[in-house]
Image 1 (cartoon, rainbow, N blue to C red):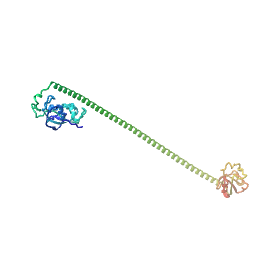
Image 2: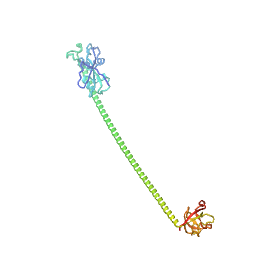
Image 3: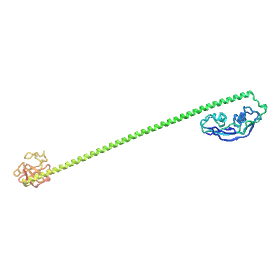
Image 4: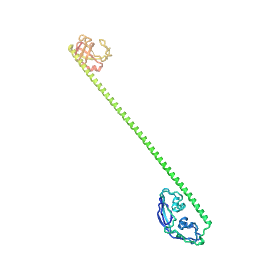
Length: 371
């Protein structure tokens, strides 16, 4: 915010901490008219009473008609507020009051902030003037004497103004102190909130890190479990394959053994056949299911209870009952039955079904009586 204050004086020499810049000046003089007061003249020319007094070497506020007041030394100075400045300290530096500064710059409070600029009016005598040179034209001798009452009024006015300025300075200092305290409190609160936000962010980051590590651990555990399961299944598959291979090998060995046994048996049968009595006979087939058949052979074998038994019916005069006989196309059988039509070189082989008997039909086969 840029504010402006007007100063009186021909010189703008600032002490440390104050910066000013001279600008356009108000020129000319003013001749006091009847009814004028310093306050009225100051208001009309936008200056203060003290500035008029200082510019014209007046010791009181009494003025007289036809008295000439010097206004040519009024200059404008721009003051930039520095840290630690108050309206009271600025006014003291330039010889003006707080109220004048506020009035010139349209201020409604005593608060000022670094960087603000005010235009100030100061009422210092021009350097070109000598100490003895009068600024104002002497008034008639009849108008010079001051009454005791005027002096008392002047003193009371100055005392009141002094008290007002002191109260304003105190209020300004208190307001500035409160403002600084508020700024400090705001900074502390902002720092506290920032620290809390940082702590919350760190806690959130830590929580996310813990969760991430947990998820990684779970993923690793799941991967380990999956690997172990796969290994277990692989081992089971290998064991099953080995068991299957062993079973197949056992079956293969068993089949080979059976084949070997069959070969041995065949060889034995061949040997037996070679050593036994051989002949060619006419062979037919029969079952135990014929009408009137008991199902029991001549030697007492129950064919119905033993449908897979290899039995042949023979002529006992040719092949004794109980003999073991190898029949070509039928296998080794027992001569355990007889029949009315079975005479001489004829046999009847037992089969389990009529269809098998029909399939067998009537054929000539070679037999060997083994035992």
